[in-house]
Amino acid sequence: MTKLWGGRFTKPTNKLVEEYTSSINFDQKLAKQDIQGSLAHVDMLGKCGIISQNEVSDIKKGLSIIEGKIEKGEVEFSVADEDIHMNIEKLLIEEIGPVGGKLHTGRSRNDQVATDMHLYMREKTELMVELVEQVQSALLQQAEQHVETILPGYTHLQRAQPISFGHHLLAYFWMFERDKERLQDSLKRINWSPLGAAALAGTPYSIDREMTAEALGFERVYPNSLDAVSDRDFILEFLSISSIMITHISRLSEELILWSSQEFNFVELDDAFCTGSSIMPQKKNPDVPELLRGKTGRIYGNLMGLLTLLKGLPLAYNKDMQEDKEGMFDTAETLEGALSLLAPMLESMEVNVGQMRNAVKEDYSNATDIADYLAIKGMPFRQAHEVIGQIVLYGIQNEKYLLDLTIEEYQQFSDLFEEDIFEKLAPEQVVAARNSQGGTGFKQVHKQIQLAKQYL
Image (cartoon, rainbow, N blue to C red):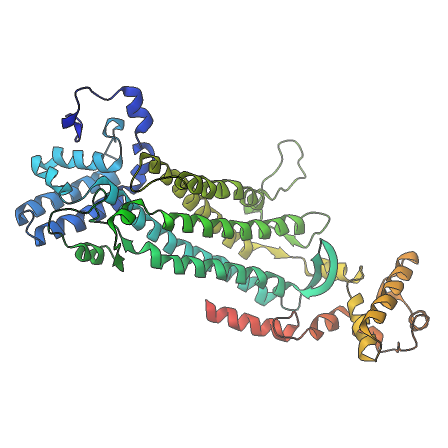
């Protein structure tokens, strides 16, 4: 058979052009969505009296047969047929005869491919929401077990103040909560139906776009046919949300890499999520979080690629837009893999409670609490800050931590110090004292956990 669009042409397509312009090698991923959209479209054509009910029945039967063959891997797609839409239509005509050519009545590949991508994006977005919640559950599970596990909190990667490990993990819970809300909100824009916009100007057939939108689970139709076939905002939004989310995944991965190092030794990742060295038998490498961190580049790149692709395109459809799919597929698959690995890795992670506690004993991260102690006793905070700086310098010079100093040493710097200073400097007391809303105090972390459970 010749090209389905070949009537106007006098020469066959150059083979190099066929190979270069074909998208079937990647857009075959849309086969399920393409058939789904075609089934809704042919039902509408029948209801509107554009084709007969017998023709509707034949086309639907043929599409069902083709779908079964594709699922069984019995279909060999052809580069000569360019894309998934033309491949399926040609297979349909081969299966049921010329009546298969009526399926394309009242639509174009332009609105067809846009519909396929809306369906694909909705499926993947709903899946991402589920996977994000699994990661949140894993974080919440670990946080609940470690409310009173204390570790150093850092700023500038320097020890700052003791905090609850549960509190630290919950910071990521809320990052992923925002990611999830962004995904859920994006469904409002994914659920617009472009089907029936045809090539760019609509169609002279008396079609019912509301019927196909309802059949496909869309909430509304595009009011403008030009916008319907040229809009890729919903993909840009997914790529943007994915870029933000992979940033959160990368930050968490970086901490897991640091915490599992011999220098920190705060956590141990399960062997199932690590690999060894080909030459150094003692090594246990955190390859999974390293690769999760490394995946940020390709997801960022996919976003920038599509932004660059679209920035100069006139309305409506242009062949450039064939380049919108591979980045979409790659980001969806990359993010799905990342989230699927992250949840069980967090669930199986062992926490070295004692090592974290020892780290807090061997630093000056409780220094702020001495300043607060003096301020409560009436010393201006800025003056107290200077006094504590002098005490920390004294400790460093004498190789002592703040809990190692005697009351006499403290009183060299201020007469306001009393024996209760040692109780105030105990790590448990330092953390518990930060009981302001959203703080790391144990009571506040328990409240935060209950709130997190409500969100899940």
